[in-house]
Image (cartoon, rainbow, N blue to C red; front, top):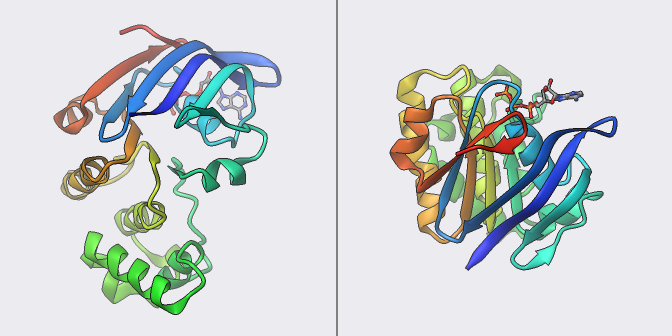
Length: 214
Ligand code: ATP
């Protein structure tokens, strides 16, 4: 089943397109890697999918229905989780409070969500009470990933997971992302290190100057 479809997507800033007519499909169970040089438009594509950036033209469909790209919360409610390049965790909140933001209203749901987060990343468990701003870069990335995954997304978008992280930590995170796809979600990752991404992605698209070139 196709989860994400981009058709003729154009997006950019101040009306100036930097993504110029991108067509892509990602199926359930699949990891697509977006590769390409700095400034190619990879982050812009992810932000347009999740509605953080309104599109200029074209279509974004999730599970066969167009998204409302003016309202990111509506896109999120349709099962799209976006781990942005800056990780977007709440630095003043503790690890547990960051998870609580998405963990459901009922105590049982919350407990299950926390257990799942700590099963994914056991290193977070002893840090539950620590403000997220005091975590290391790798721990912050784990928290951002855990927070996205416990929402059970049908589409997970991950921007530059490896940015600033030690190779060992990246190697720990990659199987978690793979596992999300193996459990049935569609996953799009943006990765500067092509060799890392190609180790566990099913397909890759090379973006250059706002277009899919390979
Ligand atoms: P990187 O790997 O460096 O993050 P990228 O492929 O993700 O690159 P984008 O961040 O999508 O590329 O940027 C595409 C183009 O849009 C670049 O020319 C960039 O300078 C421009 N751009 C990005 N964000 C903005 C913004 N907020 N305002 C204006 N231009 C922007």
